[in-house]
Structure formats: C-alpha cells, structure tokens
Length: 348
Image (cartoon, rainbow, N blue to C red):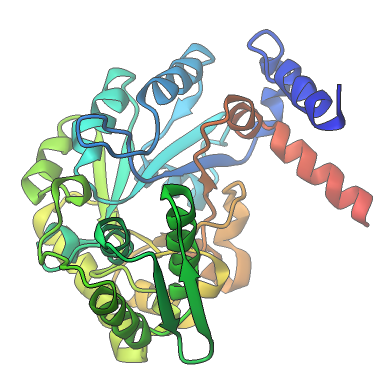
C-alpha cells in the first residue's frame, strides 16, 4: 500500500463514527462555515453537489448533536463570545442559482438545517447572467476547436479535441479572467463570443438560470436566509472606487427590499485575499452591514472581531464544501484544527 493510500486509510479510521466524538473538544471556541454553489440536477444535466452526499452529511451532524446555526446567530455568537461555541456549523450557498430551490433546499429542510444564500442581485433581477456560464455555453456550442485570446499583458492560444480538453480551456480562462480588471474581462468575453462564432442569449438557458425573488421569499419558510453577493459578481478589488462601492451598496439595498429579514452580512465574489481590500471592508461597514465572508479556508472564531482594529469581522473565513466524507468530517470534528496547530508548532 502506497503512502497516499495509507494516509487515506488513517484518515478514514480517525473520522469513523465510533471514533469521531473523541475529537469534539477540539471544536471549542470556533465554528466551521461551509461554502456551497451548484447542486446536481440530472433533469437539466447540471453537475454540482450530490444530494445524497449532502443528506448523509447532515444526518451525521444531527446524529452527533452538532449546533447547526443560522449565519446571523453565528455572527452574534462570534461577536459576543457567548454562549461559547462548540460543535458549531453553518452552511452558505453562493450566487443564487435555481437548482438550490429545486434540489438543495429540500435537503436542508429535511434536517431542519438553516442555510444562507448569497445572491448576485442583478442575476435574480434578470439584468445579467453569470459570465463564466456564458463562457461555458460559448465553448460548448461553437463548431471551432481553437481560439486566440489577448488579455493585454499576455496572448494565449487554446485548442481542444474533446469535452475534457475543452473543459480545461474553460477552467484556465475563468481563472485568468478573474485576475484582470472588469473592463478587460467584458471586452475579452465579447471578443471570444464573436471569434467562436456563437450566439449567447441575453437570458440564461434553464441550466444556468437563477432563482426568482419569489422563490427566495418562499425559501424563508424553510429556514433559508439571504444576503448580498454584489450586483454583477465582479472581483471588487479590480474596480474603481465608485464601481466597488455601488456593487456593495446596491446589492444590499436590493436584498433588503426583496427579503427584508436578511442578515446584514456580505459575501465577497471569489473571496480570496486578493479580491477585496480595506476599501471594500469600509464600504460594507458604511452600508450598514456587520460582517463579511471570504473564501479563506479556516475556522471562524471570536478573535476575528478584535483583529485588525475590528476589520477582521469583514474577513470571516469559510471552508469549501467537499464531496470527500473524511475531509468533511475532519473539519467539523476539529481534527483539522489540531492538524493545523501541529503544523504551526512544527514550523516554529
């Protein structure tokens, strides 16, 4: 058995149901916040989080008496430090696709698990659809098998021969387009659609469609909450001052108008440390919100609310939701926390 298989077997043993509770004291004082996106929907041929895997996870959390907290309640607990956190978990879903309503919501409801959806408000308003989906559709429908792309600082040439290599082109382009300014990204996408000789509709096909605001209000009855995730999902740090402030303020305004009970918590597009700055943190505070979520994978703790003169509350970490059972259990049980502590000690 190779080292990788030995490691996997050891992790499976440590996260077995019978052993897992031994790690629970490691969750004292912190919370695990998970970030989800799409849900697999065979009727539309869309990939995403598998319903049965999510159902199994929520069943495990309920069986072991985890606190499944609404995000708004968790933010208050993080701020006040009271009552102390232990075995605390919160779930969030980004963007606002319709597959949350069709697939995800029922599973969270089944286990009485709160969930907060961060909506791209222009998407729900029908003003736009998400640019990476437009790119995917353009690549999937073109008859061409190659494209030249000029990003200004670099010229790229792509070629694909099958679905796998085409998906690789899509992934690479998405990552590169996240790193350019918003004007360049829009210009490049327009050129790509033209050069691929395809027509991208003004409204998204069903597989890329958003939920509606009426859907959102119906979700409230099942324990869902909603928060702002900008108007058009740009990388905020790539915008000028006016644009960045408007994306934050207007998205929060739309969420409050359509779903007045929404928690005053923002969610950064992309969410890595390079995608927001102190400028965005101040704009979120000025808009009347009390916290913001990133995609930095770490545990959320009350110390964030004292960090950086209080700015840490606008940089709350989340873990990416994984389809790997052992990896998920390692996070929620606190084993991941112990592992990180050990690495820091060894590193020092």
